[in-house]
Image 1: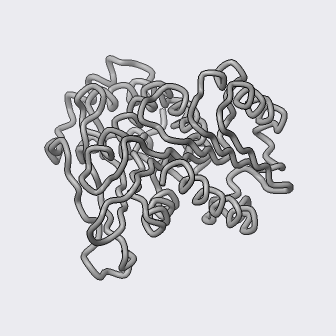
Image 2 (image 1 turned 90 degrees about the vertical axis):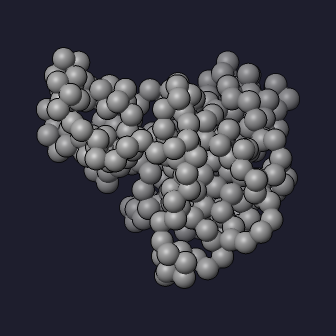
Image 3 (image 1 turned 180 degrees about the vertical axis):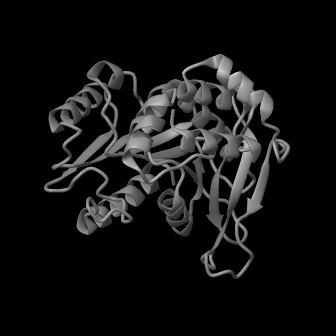
Length: 297
């Protein structure tokens, strides 16, 4: 049993950022027993009550150095597919007006500073951006812990939560249109593709080094796909990416795949020096903005 991980779950539940159901599921996996998880659940009293259905809480005071002057950002809380409270990081352009919206989906590390920074970058580019917290308050910088978290994640349930994030965005007064863009990284790249395959109100999906769909799965996708991959990614075979590309083309779905020679997995993550590739990242970001402008506005 990983005691540190269990304590993180307890803290997340007590802080109100994790539902009883999610706490019980993850704790049972860590303890190896639903009985033990239920006993721990009974002993835990949430410190904060569950938040209301829609709340946006600023994370820094106006003018604080951590918030760019042209952005408004904070924590959004909204209702999940089963009526539970979900949360995410929300960044929007400061001031009046309405903007298209983008869902930003985390890597296997969780909702961390890198993903918040990406959401801020989308807001600076003129988009309302929401990064849903799919680990419900838990994040890590350790690969073994990240591997455990992603193995415990119910991917189908995560797609449903992404759908709730889409619904939240489309209900906002400062969001235009009837569909949003979905951009995901690593694990989030795969989830972006799954969202494009199954969710309504998706205008386009942009997976950064996300495991590709099989040709059969790709045949069901009708929204435009921009795929951004590293040619030196040891975990994703370019042949599989090209097979997805061919299946999308055969289905008549707009698709563009860019494979950066020599770039590794996570080449866009500028917090990880071992994989970051500045040239590939800059080109991928420019392509992302051009793609969103074409298909989202």
